[in-house]
Image (tube, rainbow, N blue to C red; front, top):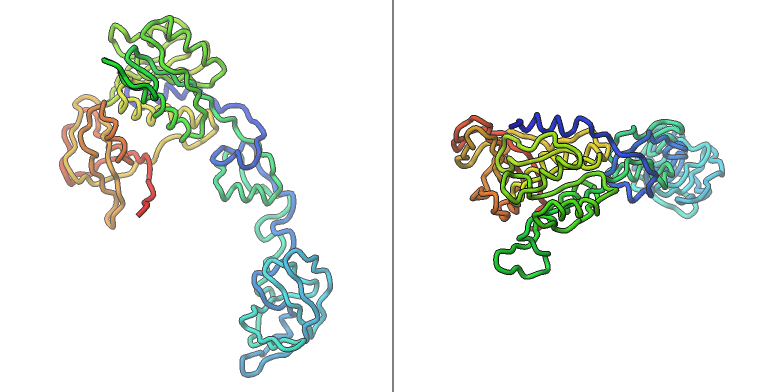
Length: 406
């Protein structure tokens, strides 16, 4: 069996980012920028006021105090959106609003809180220095300057920056399309009441949700029967996708036919990994398209997706950071090892004053899907190691950090 690291290295070796497409700005959230973004204008494009107040010559405020104010006639007003082209002469002031262009000749803005308005004039109650409360043109970026490098992940801040340089359409790597296939004679659609010996196809929905969380697009192929003909037909329906993702049928049982189909239609690179849950993981290619076969047990499918499918999809989407964050945690309770195999234990991690702590989410059998609901981390029990005692330090893979509704 391969180690987790060996399997991941083989899996990612020949994966390259998908081609670039121009997408509308708001369809680019969490996607990867494919080319440098360059400012088409200064940001901000003109000097503007950071405060509501009065545009002045700083020299005209010299010595002003609350007890000895300087009075200036107010010769105009400029609001955000006004051109603000009328020059300001010495010994006068212009009422100005936040974001409004600073009039030519003005070199400072005195906040309204430091003034007292008079009929046609204003008393200045403090002195200000040159440049006070003025945002210079190009303070954020200059025209022609690179503001985002290729490879940047486009979060809300990056989306706003792209909007400020007029990037209505953005070059990003295409979203991966993932054909999701479940196998098993026992599977029925989610909306159907299971008969004797049947279960609902929950894996397909769970994997589709994990695919969406990665920013990829799921294409559900339904459930194939435990026959080569049925699996072949289902795979044919997924042509045009960037990854085949299956659950079930990759172990050594008489009805586990997915591995055989994989060998027939492309080749298999590996099919067992030294881990628990999820030893039977198959990787290869179907008609040249990457194929990742996950175990049928729901928790095994969930965990192996996080360890293998997620990094693969992130690489296809152009991400440079592929792995989840791993942090040291202090165990609140004993954690069982898995003997010669590496064990990934569902856990709830939390941050306290002395660092990360983690507690398991209960029983860890691979059919107990509810154990994943409370989990935001996977405690890693190293292969070949024994049980870990309460209070011991371990490493944990962070899956999520849910927000509290309380």
